[in-house]
Image (cartoon, rainbow, N blue to C red; front, side):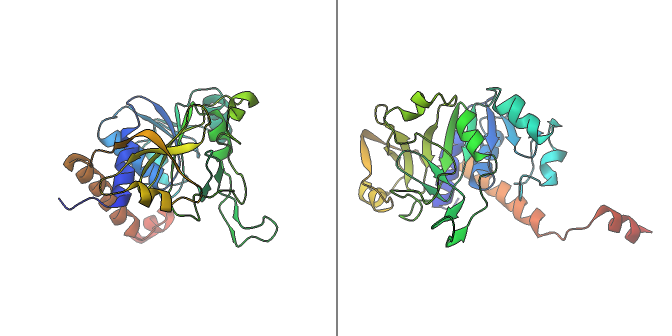
Length: 268
């Protein structure tokens, strides 16, 4: 077994945070890898929901997007998108919302809309999708994002999804139902909100990562918790399972796309 990469540390650390049988609203990318790793290891009865309306999906490979047919083919059932939000999310039935973003600030607010001024941005991103509703209504949210001073910023270029607002209890005073971001999983370790100020602070580090390295990757003066835990290294089982999942995914996505109608005509 080769040593784990930072991406693998992130994915494994995030997967461990998901208990069995929890209902999890999943984003594409690293959040999807983490949730499916949890399903394949310690949380076989986790209920994964994707925005396309797939409930209880159990994909054999990681989806390219929320509309990937793999999600519908392996789902317990598929419902219309409005029902996912109205009945499951806004109905308080989602335990964890797992999100990515382009930027996060010190109070866990997220940007996935634009980089630069909104009217003339340097980059226009995929946008909100269901992230604002997930951030508002899930009982808790986890965020996965590689840390640089361009992604962990003092001030967002655009606030797409609310975390703790300006902190110091603003989210609680707003009446927002969900509990907000409980952890931000980075490629150096974990951030968690301070219980009084709501500001993200260093909670845990991966092996061979220093507090100084963590601080250098963040665009605000990063506070450090009273105790900084050491994240346990990925186990052989976790790494083998994750790498097998990624290998299946690469193989599946390398295959040419053949439409059913074309397949039938070629067989004649």
